[in-house]
Length: 544
Ligand code: G1P
Ligand code: ZN
Image (cartoon, rainbow, N blue to C red; front, side, top):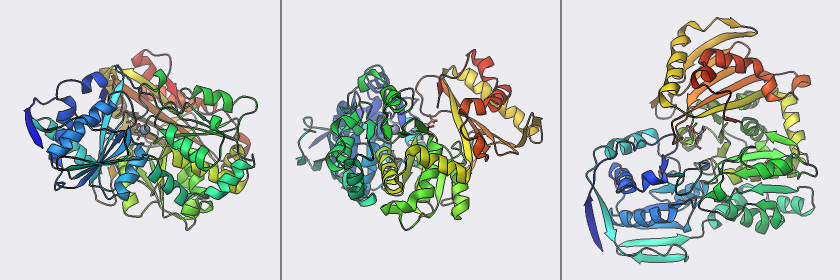
């Protein structure tokens, strides 16, 4: 096998964000851009010679091309085997599982998650370590450092590999195995959930369902699992064919982007259960007939009911949530006397807790929930969890949610996003907030008295690593919170996220509209951050 060492110049913007390096496709198409980043990853890793790397992506535009380049670079850099999803496809949770199951050294996942795809849209690349989870910060920081001084990359010379035929082939010393991207994952799901109960409950018509794959990676997974294995009707999976541009839409599972699903779930004759997943299959949105379940509530409800699911029947060790996620799960943890951890935003912070066996379930307000079965959040897993729950409790989604609120109280919650804000304005808002923090505690604003005001800092209880500046928090005596943070996944300007939360113990007040119930807090968030004033916007671009 002939390999070439190609001279290159560093790019100065290859700093991975919340979840890998995400840029416009055009940025990735610059000469040596992808190659530099991949080589920077390989240069930062040690002792992988002869070992296995998993490779796959969400099928977005540039996926196949990037995979061919990475195959040749992996060969030149001395990997022994590549395991690649057929067609270059692997959902993020399936990739995590494949890394674990085949005890691979690590994996490269090509995705920009819920960001749009296509020649003028986004692409991304993320390295996952041997536990199947996203590389922790010490890795991503060294990838970035390396990318700033890189002078060459290595690439082998051979023809493009056939990605579509299952089985193993040899390219020089490198063994390449193309595997069915769904099979191992489907087996794993079958080992966690009660498939025979689900089959029966779907077959009897007690559960009717609608799943929106948003023209993204979960289409083939949902068809195999929900339709072929569990007997749901083929029409219950919509937008099931993965497309390179996701049909021109944002593959982001929320009520705004999963519009068809939202219309049907809030229309007449809505199915019992509705859900959607994102570009790479790690996010989930859960709805029932005429009800939307916030991801924060979903996590809490899962934690409270985990014992009803065969895979968690023995009980759960603990739970974790990202800092801006509502405190609903904290109440469940307190009730069951299990530990609850608060981590910075991003799935990579759950990895150590899961590996150490300190937690079993974890989640984020951004439509991410998961467990120790893999080391990524997992969209279809969450769907199956809810289906299993409905089948076991023989109750509607609305009844399950309302009973939960009655027992634990409701954490009324919402998030406001201001997208593509000029970076200097966004930084100015953060500076302005930061300057106010020391004086805020003790001050009262209407019924809200500030209890604490700080910048979230996390010390990992497993390895002691410290992450600073993880968002500004203003907490009130009555348990309400306002959190501000800048997104680490956007590709245009800055995205400012404002998270608002208010605890309502009184069941008589549980059925309020969140925006109305949070109106006073929303006003306070503007008072502290001057976001509308400084951005000149009338309101948020997205409310979830
Ligand atoms: C967003 C979400 C975060 C999630 C990440 C990857 O990151 O807020 O919870 O882990 O996407 O899906 P952000 O853009 O806020 O940095
Ligand atoms: Zn995703």
